Length: 406
Figure 1 (cartoon, rainbow, N blue to C red):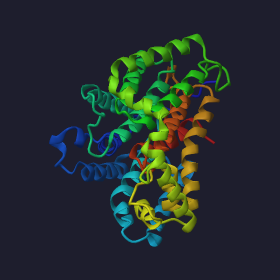
Figure 2: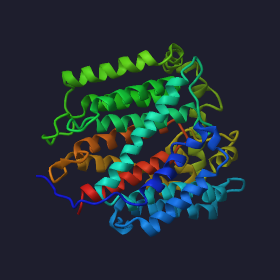
Figure 3: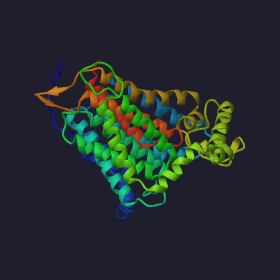
Figure 4: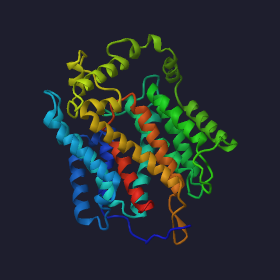
């Protein structure tokens, strides 16, 4: 059954917000060196906040969203963690720099995306992010690991590009939309960029995403979420992989092959390897189950005999820094994206005056594939507070408010 939504204009604050998103998530000031001295982060966050307060128009209310309430509790715990953080942790600096970015990314997107036009504007921005990253990635393909940002190292680029690619390919499952083939081609280029980063964690995430799309149900009229791969799905995934393999440099495959040679890898044998770091992280958690304070993982590592290492795992990072309560809240935020995707897949499409918006079916698969990409790559990275994740959460909360009313 179709749902008829009132026609509304895009929020007046949306353009200011995407400028802030372009800096916080897209890092445009790093991709274009001429912009690096303009303090764009401060300028755009103030502009976005001002426009949202005074010109946003119709708004989503925080109290009406379970995801928004979880985000409030998570943010409050981060602030509270400063009170019990250890010395030299840098928790106070986190409150001044990174927490405002996380909070504003989530709430500005959620609050202003109160109609389909604004939501689609934010979703379309993800496509342009991937276009920009893909362009820089393809032009930078060499025998070295792909890197084109001072904030994002090659592993971080792998996570960001894979999350974007997974989301865009999910949107391409809406066969009634324009640019379906363009979205899939863009996703394949994104996969090539992921491989070119030579990030083994991102490659494992790529395998998970591809497996997801192989088994994702292609029939939006049925209520099943998954099905055995059809010939069309196998052909589509094969074409995506062929294009990705053709674009990625040979040297990337040599590094990725070392996944199967872990007995000689520093991650499994050295004190600075991930297994050793994770083990020390669990010891640190047992010593202080209430947490060491946000941003304090390296201090925690040093306190249990380590050498000032970062977590290299989003879950252990939150567990050590914010304790068991923070870990539960973080898991709840991740599961919110997955559950919202499921709820969308089990609903009929949304229409207005005979014109279809992005379908619930496509949005459901896009959300589920992208959160799988984030948690799989994030299992090997210190990206629990990654800007892209909170942008994705804000859109998830807005989608739930629009498409899954109580």
